[in-house]
Amino acid sequence: MSVDAAAHKAGIKAEQLLSWEGGNSRPSIPQLRKLASIYRRPLAVFYLSEPPRRFQVMHDFRRPSADIHSPQDSPKLAFEIRKAYDRREWALELMKDIDEVIPVFQATAALGDGAEEVAARLRQALGVTLEAQGRWRVDSDAFKQWRLLLERAGVLTMQATNIQMNEVRGFSISMRPLPVVVVNIKDAPRGRIFTLLHEATHVMLNEGGICDLQNGDVEAFCNRVAGAALFPREALLNSEVVRRHRRGDPAWADVELQELSRQFGGSREAALVRLLTLKLTTQAFYDQMRKAFVRQYEELQKQKREAEGHAPPHVVAISSAGPLFTSLVVESFNRDKITASDVSDYLQIRVKHLKELQGEFSREA
Image (cartoon, rainbow, N blue to C red; front, side, top):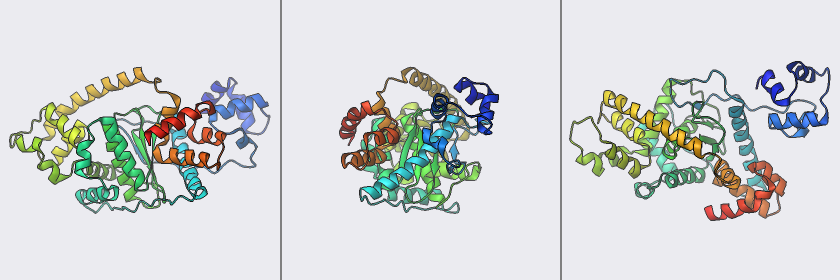
């Protein structure tokens, strides 16, 4: 964050903060505690002989639209990125401590590969079947199931809870083992499913490195793969909805898109994009429908903002950290490998909520 913003939060003048940073004066212990809270760092960090090692600057952000650009990423996004790096390292340490086998995500891809082929490879790596997809009729259940499949395949999944949708829908860390995919919890469940698969494709494309999603070709490729993974070509063409649709008619009724959404697990817009890719509709019809999707999406976001803050802390903690990371923390605590304070740090939840968290996790499991 900027010097002015940090100084304002600390209740001091910018000159005072610069004096502390330059070593010309020192904050008091209470002031130091306040800075630790503002920067989301342990107090002990300020006593290190040199700054802690920073994570590599991220470029693989999935923005909501090519038309939306954030000139400067927010401190909240920077913190979510740092948290994702930290949790990945903690997960690897916890797995070693409890003798857990580290899953290896082995699916790879190259930009020269066909999107349909890569999508089939991704589906095979996740072990997803059309029959299972057809059973996931509830939006939130469908998201949970895709998330579980990714984690079983060796990808750590998380949800960012404090980022606005106009900044980012998701990002990924392509490091191996245990790459990370993060989606924005403020997005609709079907939108989050698409982002999971979009970012998983980035992981497939970037063994051992971090990709640069400013490349439009890469973005378009990952979108095509995500669409093909959600709506496999033959299954979509043979679906009852597509077979009964009037041949050559580019207009698809909302009820048809809804049915495809429920059957395959993608949003209505993702279904229409897939139909466009397969030349079953036109760009003009998609552009027309997208305006309606945007209006409905904005209304949904308004409703979500009004409902924010109602979920209990332990529910938010599990939803954010994901099933794999939460299970490692809870199991390590049950085996006395870590303390209640460690659980609080790892899952960002107060110790007083630990019992509720354990109970909620047992029910989720």
